[in-house]
Image 1 (cartoon, rainbow, N blue to C red):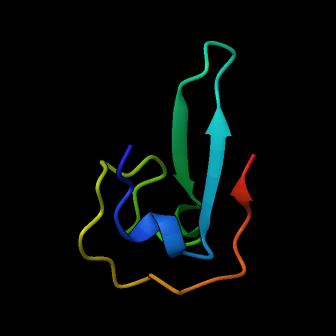
Image 2 (cartoon, rainbow, N blue to C red):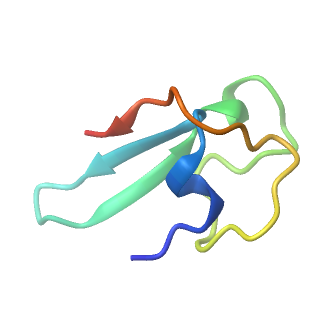
Length: 58
């Protein structure tokens, strides 16, 4: 999976389903309606992208 900018974003939260599928949740969506809770990947441009310090892969 190529998540684009989400791979390095501190706002990305990685979730894995019981079947092993991986999903990326944008935590900025909780505070700002401009951001999709479940962004379509790969994300190539994002005004909220901030490098590092995120929740990482779960």
